[in-house]
Image (cartoon, rainbow, N blue to C red):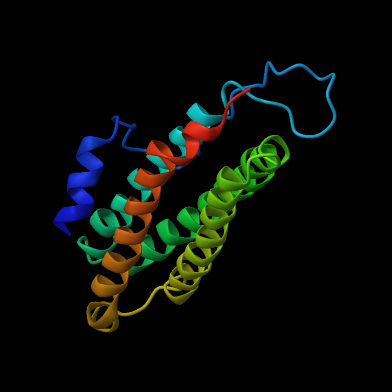
Length: 175
């Protein structure tokens, strides 16, 4: 799982116990406009979520699978699923809706946002399917059969997606 470790080591360090997701930064956005307001802390908050999720995903491998601990593995996967879904909800409600309402006159940017959103929905479905598949403790012999490949596939998709979001999509978020 070298690609995942490489990605983890290039991320800002997050404490070893990411059981609690990062707290959202309160918005200092003005409340006088209708719709979703610009939140100057949102992108940093989403990036903190990414760091938390990447660390938690690494712990699934290290503290669950490599440690031969199916119970810990399923527990970490369920935590990952909850935190991943909370991140998606925040991204969908605060980020994508804001972009759609503010880029409605820019058809090229709007299409890019729609493409990212559609792709993220497909990724989310695959991640949730992975999480459901391994949400109950399974014997290690059974895990050894499919878990490493499933984990690597999900990890590759997520690390690629995080990189795209942080380096391309988040640059569209402007007041």
